[in-house]
Length: 103
Image 1 (spheres, rainbow, N blue to C red):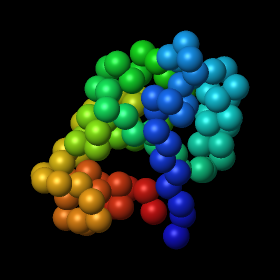
Image 2 (image 1 turned 180 degrees about the horizontal axis):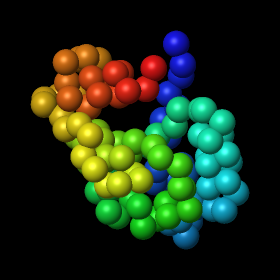
Image 3 (image 1 turned 90 degrees about the vertical axis):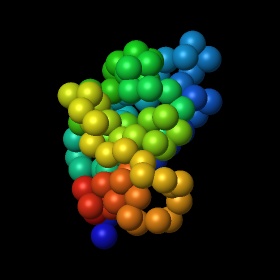
């Protein structure tokens, strides 16, 4: 089984300028190109999140709206939406999609 690494966006990946740094972009892009599974979670929408992470070019799922949706960053396509309270419930749309697609 592979590990999916998920980071918070605001206050973690973003600098005080509210952008990801070139260094952060380079590390994440390099590691995901080598097969690391990575995503970030945010309360933001996919549109506002992509504006502050425009240097991340890897195809990764974005966990948006506080976990209510998963969007593919490369195409802004909705992949999953929450069907209820998100927790360890594997039947939930978001949790189920992540479990099925990132093993």
